[in-house]
Length: 224
Ligand code: SAH
Image 1 (cartoon, protein in one colour):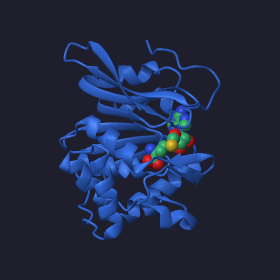
Image 2 (cartoon, protein in one colour):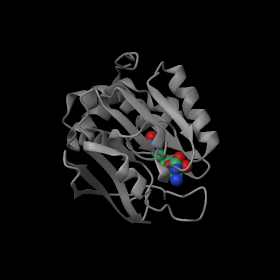
Image 3 (cartoon, protein in one colour):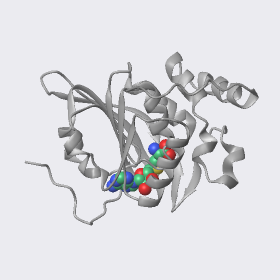
Image 4 (spheres, protein in one colour):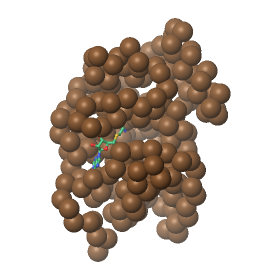
C-alpha cells in the first residue's frame, strides 16, 4: 500500500529549500519530489512552524529535535528506495522522516521510545493522509522482530555501537544507515548485507543526532 499522493507544494519557500538541497548535492529527483510534498512545518510545534522550510534541526519538545532537511534527504537518498521496500525507522521523533519514507517505500515501521512524540507523529501522519507508516512505542534497540526482516533500516538517534538485533533484522540485500558515536563525534555509517548475509560498512558523513537511549539501562545483547 503506497501513501496517498500528497500534492506537490509550490512557492518561494519550497523552491528555496529544493534549490538548497540541490546545491548540497541531493540529486535523486524522487527524493527531491518527496521533500517537496511533505510540509515539514506540520511536524513542528505551532510556535516554530514559520521555520519549517529552513535547513536546520529544530526542537520538538522533550529534549528531542526534528532533523535538518538536508540530513533527511541525504539519508533517504542513500537508502536507494524504489518503492517496494519495507523500511524500519528507529526514532520516530516528529514523524517527518517517516512521512518522507512513506512516500518512497511500500511500508514504513517506526519505533519511538517517548509515547507523547509517537502520538503527535501519528496525528500529523493521519492528517496528511499517509497511511503506510506504522508506529510503535518501545525501545528501538530491539528493532521490531515481529515484522522483520526489513529491506532498509534507518536509525535516527545515535548509539555508541550498532545494536545487534538491527543487524539481525536486516534482510539479505538490505541497507542500513545509522549515526554512530557520541556527542559531537558521530559519523553516519552505511551497512549493507549481501545475498549471502555478508556485511560491509562505509562511513558517509559527520552528523549530530540525539543519543539512542534505552528504556532500561542494560545493553541489548545479541538475540540467539
Ligand atoms: N526521525 C526524526 C528525528 C529523530 S530525533 C524526525 O524526522 O523528526 C531522535 C528520536 O529518537 C527522538 O524522538 C528520541 O526520543 C528517539 N529515541 C531515542 N532513543 C530511542 C530508542 N532506544 N528507541 C526508539 N526511539 C528512541
